[in-house]
Length: 611
Image 1 (cartoon, rainbow, N blue to C red):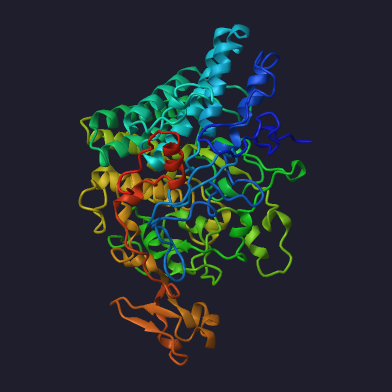
Image 2: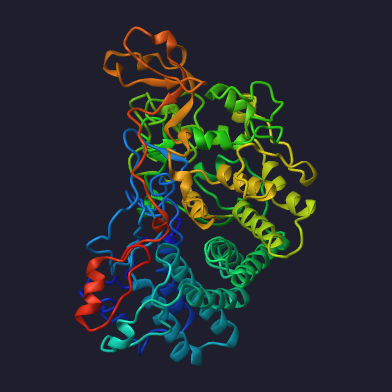
């Protein structure tokens, strides 16, 4: 029977942390008995496995949604819902703290709660490797495991910083009675991220090239370094104007990408849809790491069931996202010479757009989607064929889905790498060359097509040429054409995955979330309701169903004007979210956490703008 130790939900060896009143006060983590534990690599490996479900979540487990695509990542300018759009946080919460080791996620920030359980766990790991295991290990093993522990610590601090900015930095383990450490105030972001840089660089230089099948190795470390350092490098550039740190972090992102690319171990060799719907990703050359699901081991998820065409998708992909998909000639639709490129209905977009559009969305409008544009990205080609049968197989229904989840893909490394190079070029670095584009963007655009896509008339997108970059009329004037097109590639590649909200935050483009400034956020594709979805012409839709004409006129269904219901679908009762300002880039700390510090005679500074 196939084992799935790596992502098992059984955490007996990792020791679950219970809630408590103090910030870092926990039951002791040495219940496994320090006198006999930490003595060999098996012990270290078992302890390290406890980190995997927190950082390599995949599709999460059973009904879990934290860090799961589609079900956890749905708050961005790409997705909209009926009625008023979800508002940003507008006041300081009563509490924001947690001490749980269960993966948790603040959806509006795409990151963790104010929770230092995993920092403490990684500090414990580092301490025991240094004080106990070191004497039992050779130098190579010691450096490997120290690299693993420091990688997890760096990863956690990156996530905390991405949500809160400045956070307390805990260098090492300490006793619960040490209140000076326990209640230290927030450490400046740059200082924290310099520590993260050092931890990730150590891991990059010391984690093994191979420590077993689908477990942490130097290539996986490098993949995540490219993600983390790209995020922080661009944040430092666009938010803080710290060019020194921006260059430092971006250069490490490039070096990490170079390492993966030059290894020759990975490739873009399978069609897009199979990356997300496969029952076994083992052997797929795009996978640096994946999460395997196995019903026999009790490890299942529910993400595929929400892609099966039957379950509702709220929110769903909007017109803003759809318009961003490039045409097969490599041009935005306004400049494209592809026939019908400017006809933005689902049938035309399937065949005129980059193949990722067809692989991501169903080719008919569906009422199960708030925008009528339904994503079936996270299920195989067979799954959606059962939606109206009344008998959906378990692998496509409920929380018994078993398709494997990508955790780190080669395409992400390539896009992180090329963006970091392009950003460095604006900071005095070498210009991006065509060979760089061919290794990255064009490698991805040349991804194979599957038989179903070919049968629909889908074609590969033309290669990107630096000599003939599109001059997109929608491009922000402060963004160079090359960086704009790289950002477009990310938007097409990572729909409903981890990236979009974090991307627009690090680029300082949170205003994309305003439908007042970006009206396409409240629209779906062009539709002829009578021809494509006549079920909407029902009595209960009178006064609710509406379309927006090309000239901006909004026509509302009155029960007799079905022939006029031709235009961009106006999401039912859609309205913009409440006004927001730049403080929403970072999360406030809860009142309870600030009061907790105060009760002990210490000060916890609130996030700027939330005072």
